[in-house]
Structures are given as structure tokens and as C-alpha cells.
Length: 205
Image (cartoon, rainbow, N blue to C red; front, top):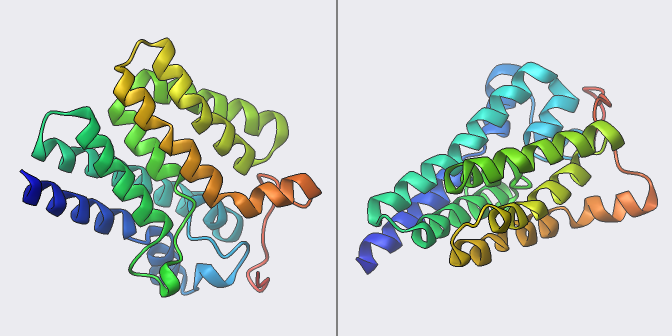
């Protein structure tokens, strides 16, 4: 059981580490996405630099990483805590990709939503609605990400999810806030980019 769990956690981390944004931008557009805009490999920066279509592809692939991790956890045991550990491993892989120089990955939002959807779909859907509402109102994707994922444990509680799952889910907003620490500074300063702002292809970060 322990050996199987360790194997699944490593596998989940490796799945999470797949740098979809970097691969898509490099293979199909011939650019290194880490050199443009914010330098992030996530869907938001891909949208700013390359447009909506590649961003949607990256978003779906990053969502899938969280789902795959949950399925890997289910392979070990039909236990939400173990599945969530696998999900956290995938999120850490997304944030700190072993396949990128200096372990530079994404912000973990899409991967977190992929995990959340498998943990409790109604709570994940409610969180997504919060995300869309915040972004529609403020135009800040980072703020929408932080607030919506911070709401996820609360929605789990309101939906009477298992208390262990609720407690473990608190790691999600902690990880997202940590990965968005620079965004938080820019939000406070008023220099954060808004949704829809384009980055010129020759604009280096």
C-alpha cells in the first residue's frame, strides 16, 4: 500500500509537471512563452500572448492533469484523502515543473480546478461561478482565481462534505495564494494586467 501510494504521488507530480503552455507555444507557434508577457506557462499568459484558441487548449489540458491525478489516487484506494494527496502532488508539479528550467511552472489554478471537480463537482462549479463573477466585475484573472479557490472549502462545508476533505481542501487556496504572491503585490500597487490585455509578440517580460 505504501509503495503503491509513493508511486502514485510521484506519477501525479510528473503528470502535473507536463508544461502544456510551453509545449503548445513552442511546437505550434515557435516561441518560448516564458520569454513573453508574465513569463508564465499557464492559460492566462498564453491568451495574452497567443490568443484565445491556444489558451483554451492549454486550459483543458491543465484541467485534465488534476483529473488524472485524482484517478491515479483512486487506483490506490477509494479514499478522498488519498485522492486529494494525489491532486496536491499534481498541483505542485504544475507549480514546480521538473521539466522546466529552475522548476518554473504555472500558477496551478487550472490543475486545482481539475482536482476540485473530481473531489466535489457542485462545489467546484460554484467556485467557477465566483471566478467568472469576479473576473467579469474586476477584469483581474488573478483576483478571480484567489477568491474563487478560497471559496472552495467553504462550499464543501455548505454542501456537507466530509470534514477531512474540507480540512484538506484548505491547502488549495494556500498554494494558489503562494503562487500568486507577485500578482497580489501588483494588485495592491494597481499594476496588475487585466483580462483581455494583449501582449505584443516582441514584448519581453
